Image 1 (cartoon, rainbow, N blue to C red):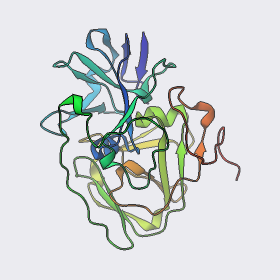
Image 2 (image 1 turned 90 degrees about the vertical axis):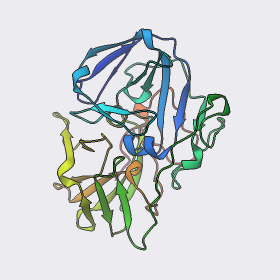
Image 3 (image 1 turned 180 degrees about the vertical axis):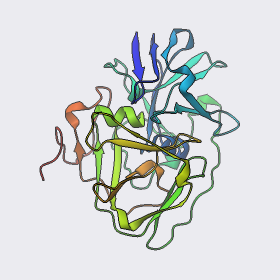
Image 4 (image 1 turned 45 degrees about the horizontal axis):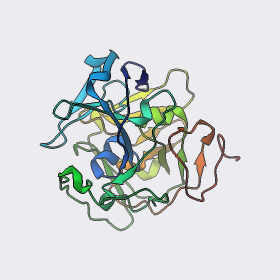
Length: 282
């Protein structure tokens, strides 16, 4: 059995393999829901899936006519999708607590890939679903960029924000806490000055979860759809923006990978960015 958990530990489950398809999805819905450049899912037979705790704390948002997105209502971590019609459990790999013996096999929806993210591995790439799936993606509205303004929003659109200043820095973080919070291979955050940021709608819909034993670590997400969104860190006068929430290019690229000592065993770093075992030196 392989166990999985949300960030706060309220939602827990176990999966009895064998694990099948493992893929990176770059569609805009996955990026927004996870707050990441891409989401990584792994499939397993539905009969081998079991909730251990917190099933009643799973929120659901109907993201399309074809499916719904689920998340922990306390911390926002993405929770598994149980697809009865296919007899499969589709599990976000970032929340599995043990090393896996399966590896990603392809990239889906690269036609929707974030412009600031570059795929550098040799895995097969598909514009949408692979042809053998016999399925099509869901068309979503695009946001026309405005000069001097970086915009972002949640999946359901009830939360939105804009930033007028230049970004301070951007990092790819592989720590287990970040991976569990965003339910993905690694998170990518871009940091801004607090004075350059403002919500344009939905600030009252945001749920914030602060890890009890952490000095600064917290998450913010839309309580309606579970999408990760920007979090204002007042004690540091900065705003932490998950890149998956962005609707326009921030004009900056990651400065490197941090906490690679905690990297998921199933994810391989293939770019040439600097790597740091934990935090980079100041």
